[in-house]
Length: 310
Image (tube, helix red, strand yellow):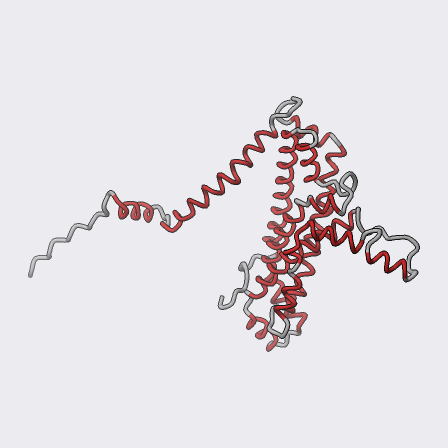
């Protein structure tokens, strides 16, 4: 019986160089491709984390003393300042809900192919090119006391005096809807386009009507996308500043947190209090975002979306 050949010693990976680094990362379950994220992480740290931590530290150094939490105590102790929280939420939440809710049926109809689809889509996203200031100026010309709408109604004898449609809550809300709708619409349209259309056709062959297909197939698959769209639309509306100044009542019902921070920084030169308000804006945004994602997890536990070919 022939003697068995001695087993060859297993080759060891090189200790130095790129091969050694590759093996060490592989042993720890780290993909080398992740190293490409390092520049992005550094940029985020320099442009976001450092300013954020600096702002938090500045908010803990009150201008007039009072301890670490002196600014926060002063803010919540002042009813005029504290009221900006409710004013901001009363504008941002309805604006985000309206934009997302209006985007769903329109995007649902526009996801197919038909003549004029691109033109109609371009018209719907046109306000993106205008900006908040131009939209506010347009509202002043159309809906102001001397605007076209009031003059038309007065000339027709339908009203005796101009209707107040701007310089109040409704003017700011309308401005937020006009400027925020294109973003919500494009996101919802992208999510809907990613849903495999054969799923609806399969439901139709099983006898499901249009409403049943939308309610039981499309909307459940679209739910994660709607939550994400709401979060982005809310963040966009929460930082409202030009609209609240131009077509709102910045000293009254549309005095939002951004205006309070601006006044603290550039009118009272209290940068510590301005940083406090900015930190609180971030905290309330995170609370709403966390609550939205929590509801998404409770109401829908399926895949992120029903993509084509998935």
